[in-house]
Length: 539
Image (cartoon, rainbow, N blue to C red; front, side, top):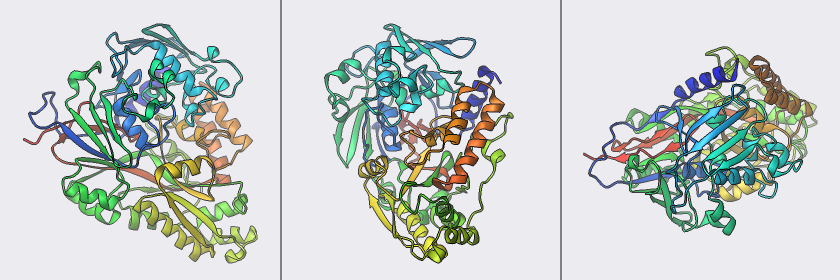
C-alpha cells in the first residue's frame, strides 16, 4: 500500500474514531454570557508543549497552541497555522506555507523559524523531553536526540519566514496527523530563549491558539480569554474559559449537578453513578484508543522474574473490575495494542487480528507460575507497593488488585497514592514496584503503542528492554511495505506479552459530561478536547 492510500485509510478511520461533538450547530453566537467552566482533571505538570506528556497538559495546550495542521469537528485533517502544504511523490518531503496572518497572542508573527526552533529544541538532549520520540519521523531526529549528529542535520528547515521544509527518515502515512500533536506545536523563539521559565507564567506563556492563558491559581484553576490575535478569531465565540482543577470524581459530580461546572472530561464520576448518568443523558461514553494498565519495575526482585510477572497478570479478574468498578462498557485487555487501530486489510483491526495473549482470571496457571518462581502460595514473597495518582476509581481498582492477589496468590500488596505531579516524577524516575498508568494513543496506527516500549524510550517506565522486540519495531518503522510492517508489529507484540513488563487491565472508553447549553465543542477518539468553536446557548 503506498503512502497516499495509507493516508486516505487513516483519514477514514479518523472519521470513525468516536469523535464526539457538542449538540447544536450554526455559526452565530447567542447573546448569553460566553464563559465556559471545564474540568479536565489534575493540575498540569507543565505547559511547555515540548515537555508535556499527560492528558491534563494536553487538554490545556490544545486551547493555547496550534500546529501546522488541525482537526475539524468532523475529524478531518485541515490547515492550521499552515495554510497549505505540498508532499513529494515518495512521501518523504513536505513543504508547508504558513499563514500570513498567523500570529502569537502577543502580536508577533508566527514564523517557520519558530517551528524549526521548537522541533529541534524538543529533540535536543539538553531539554530531555520525554516525548522527543514523537519527532523521530524527522530525518536524523533520533540521531540528534542521541547526540550522533548536529541540529543542522535534522530534517526541518525554515526556508524563509513563511516556508517550512520537512524531510522524513521514511514515509510516514500519519505525519500530517502528527502535526496536530502538542510536541509538534511551535513555541515563540524570542520569548523562550529570553526566559527559561516562560511556560509557568501567564504573562510569558505566549501561544498561537484560539485562547490565551490569563491566570493560573495553582491547584485551583486556570483562566483563559479569547486570543484576539488568532488567525481564525471570528469562529471563537467564548470570551472566557475556566479549567477547574478537580481530582475527585464525587466532588466533580456534585459540582456538575450543582451547576458549578459546565463540561467535564476528567476525572470520571463515581462508577456507582454511571448507569444513572448514562440513562439521564448526562454522561456520554465513546470508544478510546487507549488502555488502563500497570507498569512493572522489571529490575526489582522478584519482579525481575518473568514467571512472577505473568502470575500477577493472570491472577486478575478484569471482567469483575469492569462490571463492578468501571461500569461503562470497557473491554478486558489481554494484549498491548488497543482497539480501534488498523491492520493490513481494509476495514480490519489490528487487535482483532492479533487476538489475546493470555486468559483472563487464569488463577490455576498463575499459582503454578508463582510456585515455579520459588513462591508457592506466596510464601516468602516480599511486600510490594502499587503506586497510583489520586483518584477514587484508581484507588478502587488498586484495592481490587490487592484483594485478588492476596486471595489468588497469597501476596501482600501495599497501596500508595500521590498527587499528579509527584506521581509523574516517581514514574519517570522508576521509583516504584508497580505503577498505574492510563495511556492514550497519539495517532491512529499500531506503532503509537509499539514504540512506547522500545528500550530507551522515556515512556517505557518498566526498566525492560528486549533486543528482539527493539529489532522488530525498528524494522517496522523503516519499511514502507504495509503488510510486512504490520506483521513485524504483531511479532513484536508477542515478544512483549511473553515477557510481560506491563499488565493490561482494560481497553478504555472515553467519558464526559456536558450541560445541554454547551454547544460546538468536540472530543476526538484520542481524548483531545477542542473548544475553538464552542459556545454557550441558554435560550
